Image (cartoon, protein in one colour):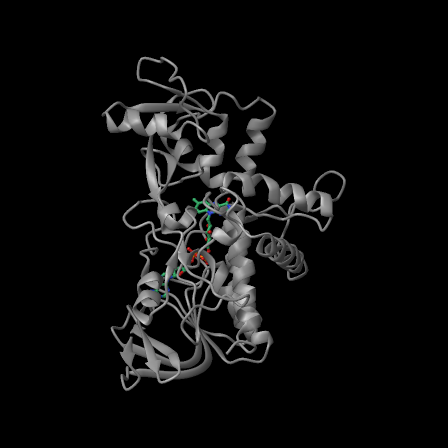
Length: 384
Ligand SMILES: Cc1cc2nc3c(=O)[nH]c(=O)nc-3n(C[C@H](O)[C@H](O)[C@H](O)COP(=O)(O)OP(=O)(O)OC[C@H]3O[C@@H](n4cnc5c(N)ncnc54)[C@H](O)[C@@H]3O)c2cc1C
């Protein structure tokens, strides 16, 4: 951490500084400002289109408050995660996610409606979601500094006291003095070429470690996702409908998106090209898959490939802590860390609490981002 005496050209002060404007940062901003805090949010890119959620569609761990459904929802990932998750955290996140998703509906998110008129709230389209979140925090009076990566935290005798960075479009330095800082810089998928991950270089982990916070669960951060070789879209869920083949059309035994990714990795490592075809998706399902994740199909359409009938070459892209679980260690229910004044939310924070040693991809990470952001924003005034 840098001594507080450091001054940039743009010197600001706030009650709360939020570093990172993805779902975690914007929910933290919304809740903290609703509590009356003066909030500044800085983003390395543009809050609303930067980070892993903004260009994607995300499934969300949205489960109605029925005990049977909730117990069932917790049980599967609890087992997969080596029973390392904590029931109290899973309960909190399920409830907060349920509330936030319902709130999004009231605030104008266009959830699709089925034939019975019931809204489908188990997923969010990133562009619409993050556009709405930006609008909401601006309306709430949050000051946003886009294209303004944080480079270093500031310290005073009590702990963390703000941060400094640079405005990349002007070269001007900025500093924000703040009583509380929320690190919401996302995960780290450095040089992965995965969609939305160009800005996710693990800066927040470095800031936290420099300030004296510890990391947790980093042994669970080696997530790799399946992607066509010609695309950055890593929607591994769709490969549950795939068979995998060699160039001559031979089926690769044991290859799969869930259990058989190691088989794929081994063949790729040996220098053999692996191909996928989503031929397990039924004719009825195919149009629905298209609507659910439109950006998945864009690269195929551009190349004139029908992924349901044509085999296409695939690779594995590192998604690190964007889908793996490790991150900044959380020490209290407000997502505080060991360092006074320092909080962490979203992929920047460890998700072991709800995923154990298993990936948070598919639903849990999105739920964690909005819930942990809310917990941090809510708790800033209650924590020491
Ligand atoms: C293709 C894809 C599909 C996914 N699908 C799902 C899914 O279906 N379900 C699910 O649960 N999860 C899914 N995920 C994971 C999910 O997107 C993330 O868990 C979620 O985006 C985390 O939110 P966040 O706010 O923590 O981080 P992000 O959304 O990544 O936002 C981080 C923000 O921090 C900013 N930032 C970074 N460094 C700095 C810095 N130094 N200074 C200032 N700002 C900084 C970035 O610019 C960015 O705006 C998917 C991820 C990918 C890549």
